[in-house]
Length: 273
Image (cartoon, rainbow, N blue to C red; front, side):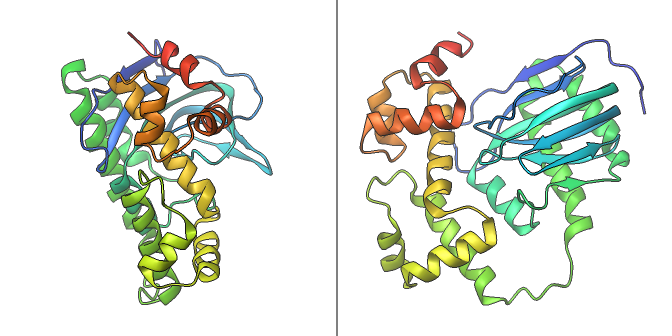
């Protein structure tokens, strides 16, 4: 494994119109030492690969040591910060999309199961990817993401009873939300009516499986989609709000700032022109 990186690298990925598959946002090599900083949330999912040195992943209730060969995930609904110790370098791919969510669900990757050690054998694949030409970065970033999911799948797939009814119900509920998040009328009652589960049962199995409430999850994927639309060039807060399932633009702005730390207007101004 190479021991030295000369510079940070950040590739921005062209937007794919099909936001329901997998959309990689950027592919980054971090080499700059990172001191401890206040915990914060991000608007995207990230798959990180530790290259060299030691680091720490700080979260609200625990601190995780990071070593070379570790793959770890961060989530839009989880606060965290990354701290360097020694010659700490890592790469990450940020992403979103319903297909990515489904893959993580199938591999039981969640905010409770996010760190996977012993992944040194795929280091070269990541390293060659970050060094690729900008014209191919959209293809290579997506291929690395999928290849890494496959690699992790070999570690994670077990003989667990796949017929568990509660697991099946939670997956069905999540898919319904993922497929209908843009509907301003989407609610617990609407999900209950269309899936023939009681509202109480829906709330219970979803929270137990994904460790997040339905309203919080719905807001998360709506804000993810809002960020995608803004990156596409949408500048009307009202239009973005409507297309993401928010009936009230003011409420949308409030939720957006809670999730990203920026108002929608400030976020748009921060995007590369």
